[in-house]
Length: 409
Image (cartoon, rainbow, N blue to C red):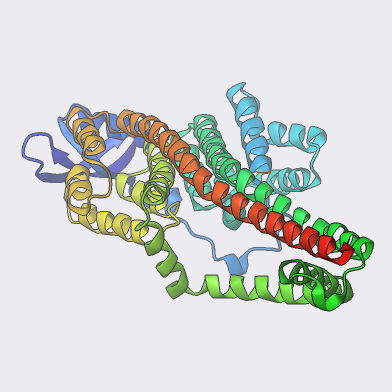
């Protein structure tokens, strides 16, 4: 039996209590605290293995520096399936080494296998890859291995990674239409400037000083691009680099983060995207046996918006002072009142993990609705842009035909 220290709240008056309890794992410790009639807020083993830290500077050079989201999903899901089948971690990694299609995944599995063969735990072996997988992944692996439920933890992590992939797909899907529209507009502009307008001007024998301004501007711009293509590419690359550098400035990012929350519909989309990631991590971490305070810290790291992240940090401070989670959510107005009622119900019933899961499902439905509304809101604006471009081309063509008609008289 291991000795766990716990902090909890009484279900009635929500007073903070603490003490020690004997259990085999953090999950069992939490269940025992719940049976005592308390709501656990923090549970950890005295001198736990998870407290061990590794200085990145002391770590050897890693064979893999980056994995795509799909590569992470593949590696995690394959490992989880084999561990759930009773295959040892060494054998599971060996299967991945032999059958993985991506060289990076083979190198990763081989490095982990060697470290484990030398006596390291899986959690210790994967810890140097925190920048590759993220803090959430490493922390959950530590918790899962300590509790003896690494396969279940990897399963939860696979679900979390797939959810991140779904969110990424939603955002990319919304971007396809505007990107295609921009490409079409650029193609029409270049087609008119390089071929259509010059051909019509030459055919009609219109003098250079008689070419309409709307036509001349398009032709001159395309001619400049033709003769200065390398310069344009260099300027474009420099401009993109400058924008990236400017974006990396915290003050600029804070300005745009604040701006996004001030625009109707866009603010709802931004907030629900961040809340979806936040509660997905909360659900996975809490059900994996991670203390609520640590779960909050991990979930806060998944938030990209500066203002929303500040709210999450405020909640962390309140929880550290013994306030119930629902009260902290209510004070900061971090989530809509309906979701806060669900959190309060979960606290009182001891089913907080299930409530986190239900909140994730509800937020995803809200996110789908907001995404549809945002797409519909963009459609009129994009229609206006198309109308302006078409109107410009029509006016230019009419002026050109008028010049052609005058030259024939």
